[in-house]
Length: 246
Image (cartoon, rainbow, N blue to C red; front, side):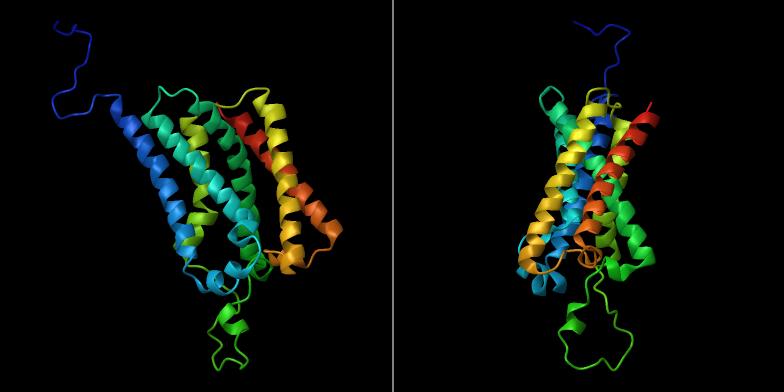
């Protein structure tokens, strides 16, 4: 049967009109997930991993950055699958749960990380393991006493996740409605905040220090305030973003 005049038929070897946005979404979601994982994978070959983090209890997963990073990677991968298989209805609600968790967490991570890096980097970055293991003073002042990862790797783990999630939320997702935007967001923030605080305290009790130097110099009361403040901040960030989402 010939097509009706109102129907648009794609020419041979050309995508139908509604396919290009779908392809763009897939490229965005899978591409950002790949870039973030590439940053983490590159971290495995650094001196700090081989001589410091790799020998500690909890490894990379004692770091909030890495936990948030993998939460974002899972969110982006699930988004890509939803783009490719829109008929699989069960994946979409699950993806939105991961987004509800990852979005505020990543914004808090980026805010704290870049704020400390710009103002007091020694409170965020560990000592340079090459200099720390040397018993002789350096003859040159060029060596950085702090360990810094390459800029692109740094951006892929501490900036790209937040940017990608903001783009996904505002341009490719609808806003959250109650109870997800009220009880759900608060419950996720409180659960993850409590779980991470217990986990990082447990790791520190075995390793003798916290993964982040600023936590090591805090007393228990200050750390509790830090954990609680970060959790509340994550919840408020989500509430603000969801409020301005149209």
